[in-house]
Amino acid sequence: MDAAEMPAGQFWRIIERAARAGDDQDAHVEALRTELRELSLDMIVSFEVAFRRYLNAAYSWDLWGAAYVIHSGCSDDGFEYFRRWLVARGRDTYEQALADPDSLAQLDGQPGFREIWWFEEIYYVAGEVFEEKGGGGDVRDCSEPEAGAYSGAEPAGERFQTDDAYLSRRYPRLWQQFAVKPRN
Image: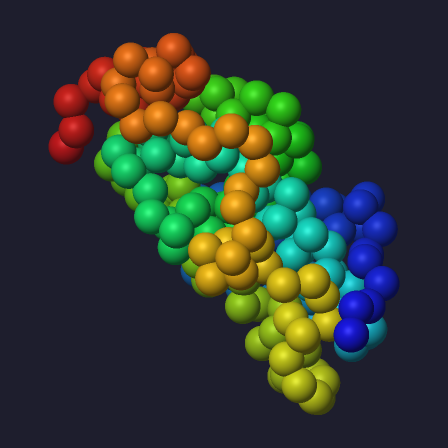
C-alpha cells in the first residue's frame, strides 16, 4: 500500500535541520528523531515515502561511479549507504550530485574516511520513531520498494567502467581529490 509523499519543501526542511548536527552521525540521527517525534504517524509515513523516493531517484550508475572513486570501490550495500548519506546532506547537495556527481568533490571530506560518505543508520530512524509513537507495522511497507541489488532493478543510465583512465575522465575533480592522493 502506497501512502502520500511528504511535500518536498517540508521534507528537505526536516532533513536540513537534522543535518545541522554536523558530521557526528549519532547526533545527526538523534536530531532527526527529534524532528520526526513532532510529526503525526501519518506524517512520519509521508516522510518515509519521500525519503525512499529520493533514495530511488539517486540509484544511477553515474552516482555509483562517483561513490566508487570516493571509496576506492563500492559494493551494492556501500552504494545504499552512500545514497542515504547523500539524501542526509540536504537538498542542494543532493540535487547538484544528481545533475553532476563530480560536484561532490567540493564537499569537505578526507580520502579513506568512509563514515563521512556513508550513513546506514539514518534509514531506520522513521521506522523507530513510528514504532515509538505507537504505529503498527513497518513504515517502509507504505512506500515503493528501495531500488538496489536485491530489488532486481538496474541503476539508471550507462554503467561506469572501473579502469583508471575512464574514471579520471568521467570524475576529474573526484579523481583528483580521492584517487590521486595517497591513502592513509
